[in-house]
Length: 346
Figure 1 (cartoon, one colour):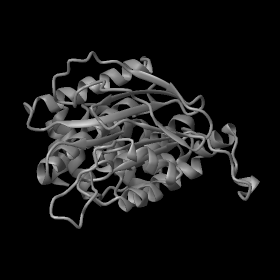
Figure 2 (spheres, rainbow, N blue to C red):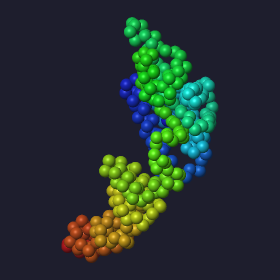
Figure 3 (cartoon, helix red, strand yellow):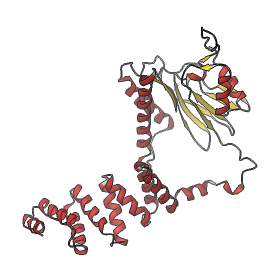
Figure 4 (cartoon, rainbow, N blue to C red):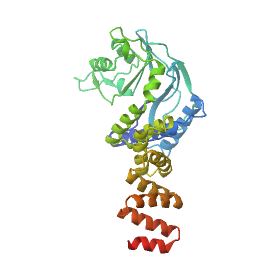
């Protein structure tokens, strides 16, 4: 996705933030819990368009954004996309640059459009490069030394810059700046499809599809990556990774230990209960996990299970004050007030 929010300074920044939040929400929802969507790529993209459009339309024209959004099938190169009044997408193939779109297809997101929504398709070939960019790529002051500015009006100049830059973003930017000064924000996005392996790359760095799957599902790699994400404060990403690992290997205690803890702290008590129970079957000596298990069950109203976990911890650590408070509270919730009072007095 490449987009450009309308407005200067805070207005444009606000639109960019809104777009980022909405897209992140859509992507997280689509990928949650290893979901397999019962939709075609075109249907999914139409849902994306409608959701983003509805959000921006609610601002009544004060915040709109142009954008091009692609969905690409990694193996075949089949592309599904729409362009909402964004600068045309460039295809760089065999040293030549050309536009994918031939004309305006949709108005900006947040504005009513006289065009019917339609998902466009295109098939990439090996070595093809797609380049998406904001209109800052075209809005160049060709006479920066003069009092009156002369703004470039030739959109085909960008095709020349892509060819001279040979599809390399840094070189393309350099070519743009050779013509004059930028007058607007410039953002460029490059997608390169299945480039041939360079001859100087070592053979052992090339993985087959099976190798990639094996590495991706390696419990030790999942655990280390998730732990690093957690240390970096990316708890949600760590949880998603751990859940993937747990789905494929429920017996891995390192994954179970971290997933149980993060699920509990994240208040995903249903997941926490399942994983903590699983972990404690093998390692019942981790005392605090009995406490977490008891609390998690209490939070979802499973008082009998909460009681059993709390009693188990009480047998191991009879003077654990936090657990005694919890145990008393469980008895209270179960209307066993005499036992609640007795535990509280201890």
